Image (cartoon, rainbow, N blue to C red; front, side, top):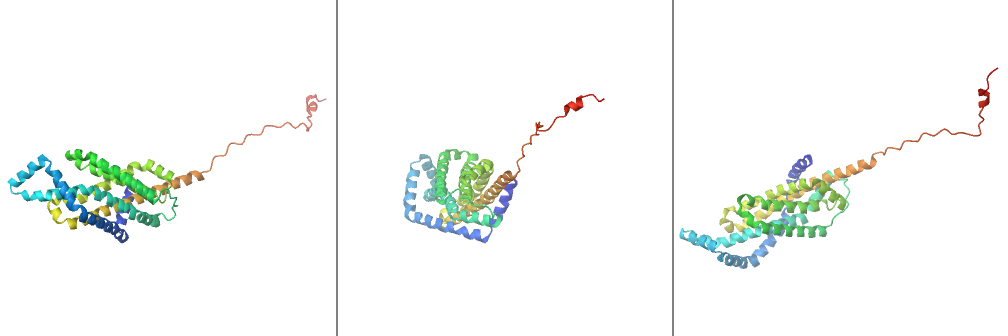
Amino acid sequence: MNLFLDSFWRALVYSLRPRVIALSFLPLVLMVALSGGLVYFFWEPAVQAVQAWLGELALLESLMRWLESVGAGNLRSVVAPLVLLMLTLPVIIILSLLAVASFMTPSLVALVAERRFPRLERRHGGSFWRGLLFALGTSLLAALALVVSVPLWLIPPLVVVLPPLVWGWLTYRVMAYDTLAEHASREERAELLRRHRLWMLAIGILTGYLGAAPGLIWAVGAMAIVFAPLLVPLAIWIYTFVFAFSSLWFAHFCLAALDALRSEAVAASTVPMPSPASPVPAAIDNPTLPHDTHADDQPRA
């Protein structure tokens, strides 16, 4: 618990450093460029496809007719773009996490190691490409979990529980690997995951709930479509900053746990082993020495 809270406060302080804030703009630039290209080439066809899909839903069509009858028929034109925007949010979140893990986490881990653990040996238990493949595979599993759990979102309590849990699990899996890839060996990483799995998962879930905060930006409804050119970059930067904070939290937690693990190993190897008890030498009968027993046995005159 002490390590959990200590790493939280340290990550909070580090996240306000100018260096960290400056680093957060690199994934933002990449994500805005990527999303801008996708919008330019695919937005109109995607909106038309969503409109066709929504037109096949009888319940939604009845709702649209009712809105037209009460004078709110202009909402029909923004339903499809808003639905498309909601569908693309999971993709934006996953890509933001991958961008932070690829472009920010190595620098943030190096910052923490330089300031707090300069003597911590680097044993290179992971690599960039292996971490990238691991992150992509884990992201696909998280996306599948989100798709499967969508029907459960209709139950009011679960809609605010399931998505952050999925994001938390994804954050825990990706960040735990990336923060330990440079300094820990494979065996050490496995041991730390065994010891601190629940605490790392708790960090991921808490940051997953923080990552859900930018979703409030889209609560403005139809106005989100009007201000989308401004809201999308803002949401991406918030996602990026939250994941950067998560990376710092994992870096402080994991490197401190790794340092403690190695200290335990050194202490165990330097404890003197008790020496076995030396056997008591038995009396040796030296046949070369004379035994003057007869003189003692004879009675004195």
